[in-house]
Each structure stands twice: as structure tokens, then as C-alpha cells.
Amino acid sequence: MTETQERTAALHSYLSYNDAPKALRWLERAFGFETTTEYPDDKGLILHAELRLGGVRIIVFSAEEDYDRPARKGETVGHGLYVSLPTQEAVDAVFASALEAGATAVWEPVNTEWGNYRCRVDDLEGYEWTFGTYVPGEPQG
Picture 1: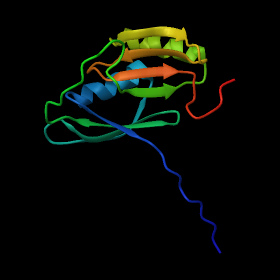
Picture 2: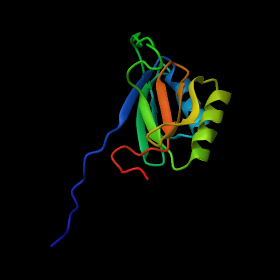
Picture 3: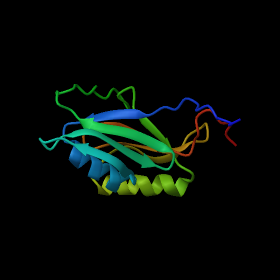
Picture 4: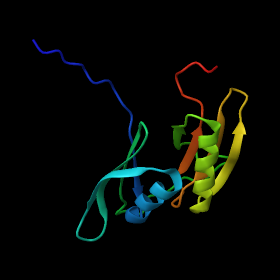
């Protein structure tokens, strides 16, 4: 008899970029992602690419349509990506590298009243990224 372990649910985000080849290199440089899969087409567009950073996995592809990006209202567009990092130093480091790569700062790294040390930036095409020490779903110490 062979034991099998059932795979649990996992959430993965997908993002379309007007210039996906440029976005892949930018995500590597700015946030430290590693591109693990990249399928270009004969027009220089990205059909499908996968990136990882620790346990984070995202999918990127070229936008062949001009998708609308929601306008910021106050500090947010109302949705974005949140990446949990292990330390405040890691949050500071990704904030610095993102700014160096041309990200727009939304929140500089700061502690929140619920114990999250976080920052927020917009990437080169306006996607909202928050990096923090808080792990959703886990008790905070």
C-alpha cells in the first residue's frame, strides 16, 4: 500500500503587464524574485512566466489588451499583493531595493498598532505591493 498526501489549497496571484519581459527583470531586481519559468511568443510577449520568492509564487504574462488600473483613493487602490517577510531588516532591504529600481513609495517602513512592520510601494506599472512581518492567519506575538 502506498501512502499519499493530499495537496492543500494554495493561493497564487497572476499579473498582466504591458511590458512583461521588462516587468520580469524588474521584479527580480526590485523585490528579489527568481523567474523559474518563462514562455515567450514569437512577438516578444510573455505567454506565461512564473516567479518565486521563498514560499511566494506569482504568474506574469503580457497584457494584449489595455487593462484599466484602478485609481488610488487615499493610500490604496483597494487591492494589492502582500508579501510576508521574516524580519524588519528584510522589509527595509526590499523597500530600499524597490526604490532603487524605480518603485513609487506609498508607505515607508513603519510599525502598525497590530504589530506589523510594513511598507508599501507601487511597481513600474502601478501594481500595489505591501511587504511586512505580519503573517495573516497566525497569532502575533
